[in-house]
Image 1 (cartoon, each protein chain N blue to C red):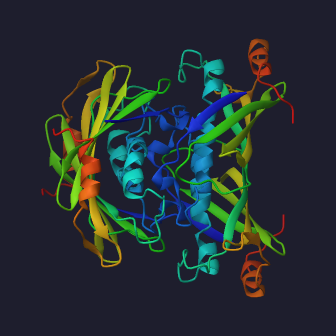
Image 2 (cartoon, rainbow over the protein chains, first blue to last red):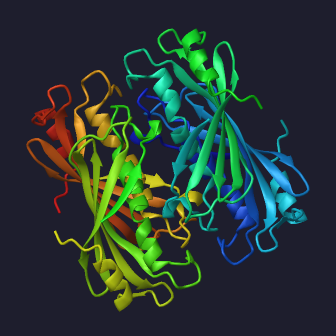
Length: 133
Length: 133
Length: 133
Length: 133
């Protein structure tokens, strides 16, 4: 499991005083930083060695998130396929699970514009964080 | 159907030159402005008369969205339930369907903290835009 | 003068019911799209031909911006220097000037990591939109 | 001095591989969270007791900010006036001062729609963090 702490900003609140739903997309992206360490160890995104593309995200909003307390994002790998994998994110605030969502990332050759198999070493790195749903 | 035109910003591109996935959350929110006209005709969000809360969103990223061309968001109501409804969004750029997603909005009494039935007049307004999947 | 219309999103409102100050940074960036047409006519940002970098922005918040009405961003070139130029943005809503700000863009060689003179043809394109403060 | 650590997100990078200028507006807002503890100790923003409005922000971009390393935002009060105060923010990454900016916050009565004097106890709280430029 990866753990990421995020601090709500004043402007993340909407007029109802809750964290706006669109903010979770940014927070969960931040929680995927460890995957960039696996798939872009040198932080080289434009030399053709980075091969991930986002195929799907979803968000279930279970309880209002509020301004004033940090939020813990808990992240697992929930599925490892041959050419893609799924990440599960949970946003916890004050012991409440407030949002739960997924991201499906596809291994993709940007030059050939086609999906490619996940290398075995990357699969092994992902497997360390696997917790099937 | 509701149609919303959005213009990608330079900063919406990520380092790969594509529109970042988190941007779609904002664009689809903008495409739901017409629903605020139905559920908050006076734009009064804090006087207890606004009763919608977001329960779920999802996004299927079908094709890269690029900077340099406007994007048309086409929005339908795809389901009308007793206490909630589902909105379907499609992001089109240069005749390509690039992203498709849903939002599930729940009719909710923020004071009582419980779901409440959708009023018949709101259901009728939603039904004008219904296109079942 | 360049004119850009933007539509406030629900999530752009903060808890006080006003458009949050950070939103203007995004809106004014969108209003600079015409400058990308001058400095990146082929939308090629990674081939070494794009030579602009942001050096400064400022924002004076003169009147609250609200959700529910479109906002017109009026943009001029207010200064053309030898290696940089200044853009002036105004955000108007319902005949009120609500925010006024500047962006200073520097002509910059990203490979040599040094400022470079603005080419004469670019200066001429900028001069078409010049309105000194 | 207040210190806030922020972690760049993948989507905060623009196509040039730098953190986009608009992101600093959000980071500096997060760095102002301690001021909400002074001016909204109960996190009550809609009961008429919160009296701050943003009048001005500016940003000097001194060096590119990159993805892959946390950023430390150092925040001081740089001016305390009778009805407003100025905050100075600095964004540091790997011992480099990369962005420097200000925010001017005005004490404002949202009901009367006029500026009001800063209370002495608030001035005293601000003075603990004063470092004149």
